[in-house]
Image 1 (tube, rainbow, N blue to C red):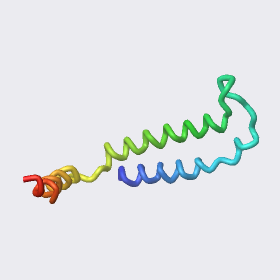
Image 2 (cartoon, one colour; image 1 turned 120 degrees about the horizontal axis):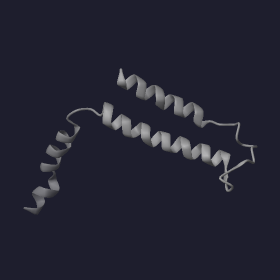
Image 3 (cartoon, one colour; image 1 turned 90 degrees about the vertical axis):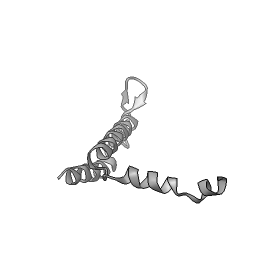
Length: 81
């Protein structure tokens, strides 16, 4: 169920990322930042938080062990010996 909600939020972020309503808005936020730029900064922060949540909540088990075992048997290490 977690996977469904994470992917649903990803789809939601993809949809709201396509903004057309701030293209012609000349409003400045904090006196210097265009509202469209602030909107995209917010989308970027939300995407970063969502991917952090995805890694914490739905990362597959055992991936780290598979990578560690493949690194121990890499051809480069055998060549050094």
